[in-house]
Length: 268
Image (cartoon, rainbow, N blue to C red; front, top):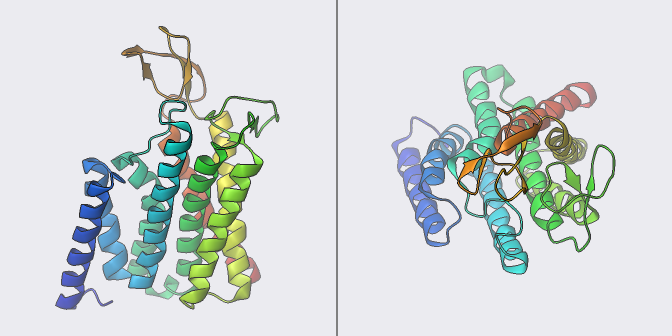
């Protein structure tokens, strides 16, 4: 697409409006999430390509479907994981890939190989982490904390399981498959995308286990990711107060992008 082409603008508006309506109908995003998604989608559609956007849209659609399956299987109350994405979810997962496109537009010499690798590394990390979380919640046994491998409850930040890593691997492979179909990368760079996605997903788990804020409800005693529970302020028992699950996602997608760029510079 060409940003200066009026047809590009019309196509972008029509595509984003259609996706917004579908997202509302099927409760994939709340209103705040839709508002936050519009500038991200607009930047990628008008400054990159339909193919770039298709990879992002696949992540969004598959993640939404898997989340609905998880909610149907185990319910939405068992673990405190949002099943309707908010603006925080959208920014956490979409800011890094959008930033890659903006940097490539401002620095044209950086546009080709590194921009593509960084974009796919960010999307692949977000996709892998989301599917690892959602599919991991279906694991029939208690998962293990990534830092010490002790058994913890489902939904605990930093918890990992075989189901989770299978889900993350599937997401990374889908990202690579789309990149190959769209002729974005050669075989070496596909391996870089896969590796950076898995690394970013693992970093997300490590950050969740270490620096993400964790709280205990002063009313029911439940461990939670939220600073408020049962209508009252909860007691922080670990982590950094300003680092919530969305901040962890933002950091990990950025690391996934930078990992892909570093591997591309080193190997390609």
